[in-house]
Amino acid sequence: MGRLTQFDFNYLSIQEIQLHKFGNNWPVVYILENGKEAYVGETTSAVRRIKTHLEDPIRKPLKTVSIVTDEEFNKSVALDLESMLIEYIAADGKYLLQNNNKGIRNHNYFEREKYTNSFKEIWEELKENKITVNSIFDIKNSDLFKLSPYKVLTEDQIDIVNALDQIILSHTDSVNVIKGEPGSGKTILAVYLAKYFASHEFMPLPKIGIVLPMTSLRGTVKKVFKNVGGLKSNMVYGPSEVVKSNEKFDLLIVDEAHRLSQRKNLSSYEFFDKTNEKLGLDKETGTQLDWILGSAKHVVLFYDHNQSVKPSDISPDKFSDLSANWFTLKTQMRIKAGDEYSGYIENILRAEQTNKMVFDNYDLKLFEDVQEMVDDIKTKDGEYGLSRVVAGYAWEWKSKKKTEAYDIQIDGYSYRWNSVNSDWINSNNAINEIGCIHTVQGYDLNYTGVIIGPELIYRDHQVKVDIAKYKDRYGKHNSKSNYEMLSYIINIYKTLMTRGILGTYVYVCDEGLRAYLRQYL
Image 1 (cartoon, helix red, strand yellow):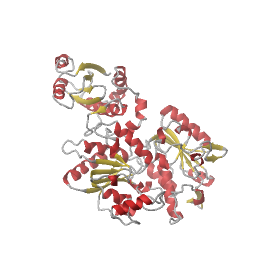
Image 2: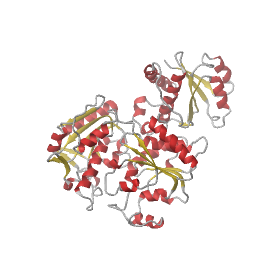
Image 3: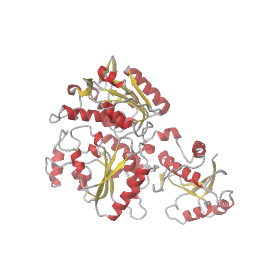
Image 4: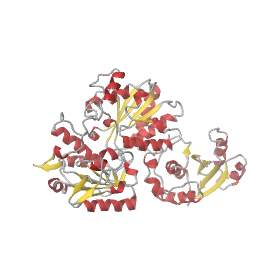
């Protein structure tokens, strides 16, 4: 369906475009590029729009105009195709896009499915003409796509962006908290906001940072920012790095804010104490949240108390006591099972679910044999890509010191924990390893195989914790009761079981818990 016509990006080409069948008074989509940078747009007058771009000094370095046309295009088709091309070309990695990310929208229109399906043909034509590089399959499984700031937002995300726009541009300082369940698009919106305010059409903020408490996700977002025009990898920080700046940030955006640390069960206390002292905070009660609040004029915190997974995570009371603007993300963006899935999994793990639910568009399965599940995940990885096996922290990490050692032993089968911490999901051997909560929280997968370890058991009609079998040294503390530890561990498994876009496979070590879960999975 798509037809591609190319011209040099100069004034001499205007007459050629004028003579082109779709040069005037017809909806088209176009790509301006020079092999390194690109701009994607749509118009009903290619001649007038290209003239305008030729007068823009930012567009001046671009060399080629590629116009996508079709006799069946209408304005809605052009708008839809423009947003798809922006999203995919940004994630293709060949260009730095000059586009800002405001106003990228999808909407329904007559025969939209037909036109959407034709996108594959258009993309192949772009590849044949060496305008793009990667396949749609590879792009959709890439971090550049999943964490792109050029995403089409949901209605509740759009409402939050508009509200924050008003707050940040009309106030000298603010604290804003955005709550959201797993899969509600917190990380997507965090990245979107960084790009949005960095390239704001009226008042771009000069000093913006995005803070990620987890090392693994931080490394991944750095790679994404490196490939987005207007963003840089040095805009991505760990919580302790923001206090080293000599001047306040205009805006700090904190993803996974529930993973910010307090002074409890840390691997090192020295830096923590020195930072509290430097900032004039009490050594015992100062937290990484306090560090961030004191380092920026405007702060946006993405928060879900049900994803707090260890005692060093900040208490929910610290967030509820904030004088802040509160927002909620409600739309499920990740999981094809829909909005009810996350709550269903939590209710099951807390033994509060009364009836079985069936999710027709989601592959949710309980396995009786762990190796069968591992094999099926490997098959799914071959079919869909980005499928991984993960587990609760119920086995010592022996392979950290002895790489040939096995960590996880189940029914005669042996497995190793993740061999790398940073960006494990995309590492070369990830499909043959088992990831933990610290390597997958915040990521999307197509299929997730979850091993529920022997630390979670079912006795006397209750889900309980056998704390002796929980092996995360920094994940438990003697000040925490069994009830509190159970809450952390349930949060871990809920987080693991809400990574998969297309499906979640589950194996349970404890026979009593496995029998209980058969009622629901």
